[in-house]
Image 1 (tube, rainbow, N blue to C red):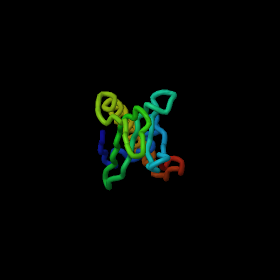
Image 2 (image 1 turned 60 degrees about the vertical axis):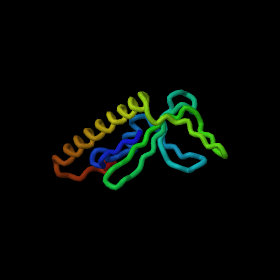
Image 3 (image 1 turned 45 degrees about the horizontal axis):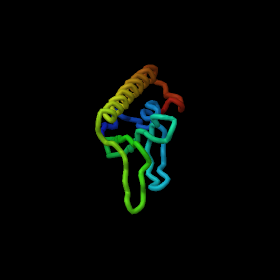
Image 4 (image 1 turned 90 degrees about the vertical axis):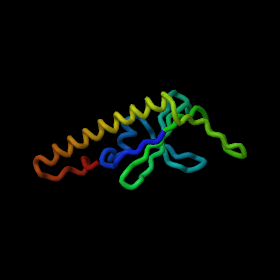
Length: 124
């Protein structure tokens, strides 16, 4: 499942995904950077997200890896790209997008009331 967010709504994909429980991941074979959320103590199954900058938008592509992909002559990927679990997880992530945006907007309003610059640790 792929969802596009305006950057004004999703100003920090990293913050949203971290708050949603995702960890950064670099595929050892392809070297692609992504995010994963393990559903058990094992490596699989896991939700897997790719984030892509698309100018004024951010694309979030979500799928569920049930088991490790096989590479070689018979390349196979066991990812699920649609269904109830995918929709429910995307709804959960969307909730974090909304919450993070509200907190960010509230913080900007609070910081701008006195007209003083924000400290460096509050710039994100």
